[in-house]
Image 1 (cartoon, rainbow, N blue to C red):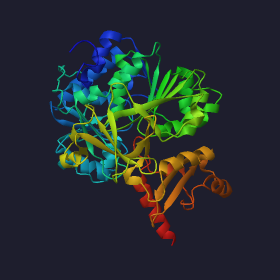
Image 2 (image 1 turned 90 degrees about the vertical axis):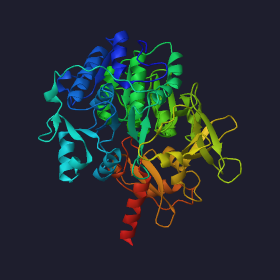
Image 3 (image 1 turned 180 degrees about the horizontal axis):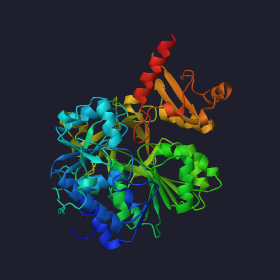
Image 4 (image 1 turned 120 degrees about the vertical axis):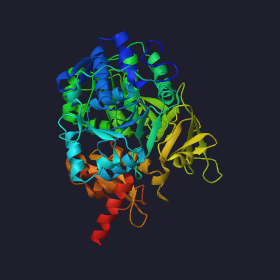
Length: 524
């Protein structure tokens, strides 16, 4: 398979660190936290050390009874060791199943049942909480493997140090190699099955873009460690010998200190993380002074955030936005520059990337898709996930003549830019684009940390607002900002901490709407 960590046709997670170490073993990785599974490893690693830890953990996991082809659910506190454990599981030939630590126990139990007796790899606090919630792990799992002190009933990884070495096991190109889940914004998450081929395909666009860059530097990553995008980002960094800064603590003050010390060249983070870091643009530590590239996937990003971050860099910075989803990977993207960011339209998510997917718009009513009459956004390429585990019918329902229906609606401009207006599920009749309204209102009211438009009890559009430091909203300023949107009801303000979110910090709009309706009915 060659000595590059990325095979020409398939990405084999279990040997990514080993193959990178063969070429760039001294490349550093710096963490802002200790590894739960290897606390003695410290916060500075080389790629050679990373490869050694991966092999060591794979040996332990095999000794714990995991066999090729079996499912191993990884469900533990947020930590880079989530990536490390998944990579080790993949090395044994088993299939890592990444379940977010934010999942509630009911959803976790339902997904464990769907997986039909997987191994569960977890930590002590999670295990205690599962026991307190009476989740029947003995019935739902093949066994529990513990990180740290998990007490009786779990096989301790720590006690398996020094286990006999195992050789890496490779699946076929189109066999399941990793399972992640959808965000769960509209109900129980779906289990998305990735293969070596689909994971390798998703790297093509960014391999092309990285090939255009003459200089590279340290890459800071702050995304969910178990998300499919994390595995793509790490594969790219290791293959291209870019030092990695791994951020677990997203608190703005902690981030400012970490970036001021380590000076990232590129930052990849969630849209809502960048939103939370906006005020660091004026921080005397100048945490973004060294940043040449900001990169964001998962969700569209607010124009105000992009402008503030670009102006906080001391470089000729670019903000690169990529639009995609768990099932699809990157579909389209585009850069924004400081000189033109003031003209940014937050609904414009970009153009097809070199080596990336084809995108089409399908009319909902037989008329040409437009801004007033958005169409379904469909995607086609060999990076689309293989299936939904245990829900083939649900997967097949999204495929139309070989095209994957994303569930988003939008249109194309005359210049070919894809505009994503809303999730089909979130559209409110007579409102236009919820996301566009949110962008514009955030632009006008700098005191807002977030605004989310959701349907109320009568189907009316209710803006839920959160302010910085939860300060009271000024009613007069609000009325002036939304004067062009008479379809909006009066705002409901809640603390930012009470906004229901997924592991990738997307607002769970269905859950927010449910809570809002309950609250309003209680007031009647």
